[in-house]
Amino acid sequence: MLEGLEELLISADLGVETSLRVAANIAEGRFGRRVSADELRALLAAEVARILEPVARPLPIYPKRPQVVLVVGVNGSGKTTTIGKLASQLKAAGKSVVIAAGDTFRAAAVEQLAIWGERAGVPVMKAEQGSDPAALAHDALARAQAEGADMLLIDTAGRLQNKGDLMEELAKIVRVLRKRDPDAPHNTVLVLDATTGQNALNQVEVFQKVADVTGLVMTKLDGTAKGGVLVALADRFGLPIHAVGVGEAIDDLSPFDPDEFARALTGAERVG
Ligand SMILES: Nc1nc2c(ncn2[C@@H]2O[C@H](COP(=O)(O)OP(=O)(O)OP(=O)(O)O)[C@@H](O)[C@H]2O)c(=O)[nH]1
Image (cartoon, rainbow, N blue to C red; front, side, top):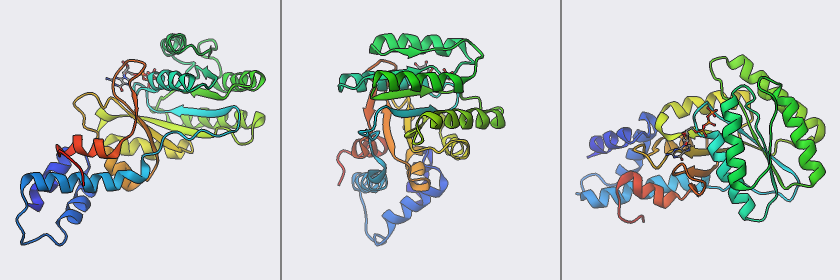
């Protein structure tokens, strides 16, 4: 039974280390007793939910204005889309929001963000292609301060091919922001793509080195990827999971619900 359970967990992308631990926790004290498949799924779901509960935390909103949220992640992980969805949610909650299109390297990324800004009804600050993203971040914060905006969301480039450049670029953005506000950025959110599986663990490690990551968003959970790596991430890093992306539309960003997630992952009917 234990072996079967371990295999199931590994195939659900929990990773070997976490799978073994979860399976061991469940098996503890249960040897010699027959457990039905449904019972096993329920036990598993409860154990997964128990690991995830402490990290299911929405993006904290501070009274401080403007709250600066730096959004980092590799290209294609869903940063731009997540910023658009987040801006829309914040706007709906009565917050005034400014977006900075900080991936100045890719013209398409800036255009895409402008479209999201329009949809969300939020201004998007842009700069010329190839210009210094730190200068843009500075101007965007100056504007957000002048307008008394509640939130500033900053998109960044995600070129991991050259870690040194990325590190320098993000460090410069932070340095420049701190000239205007010593506490900025208040949050650094790493966006991860569920379809990258166990690779998400490496991405967290790399981005923790280049930026002070304070929380995660996992995208593309509407596809075939079940996102079991979130359990491994929680187990290993304990970073808050602020939200999950469940589609390409503006409303497709949901709070992270550990019980629901655990049920979907394990196929259990009910948790507990
Ligand atoms: N199905 C699904 N697709 C998503 C989700 N989030 C983002 N996407 C899609 O993933 C692709 C990449 O998303 P982007 O937001 O452009 O990713 P990015 O990290 O900003 O990438 P760059 O602009 O290349 O830096 C797009 O086609 C999005 O529509 C999600 O939650 N579900």
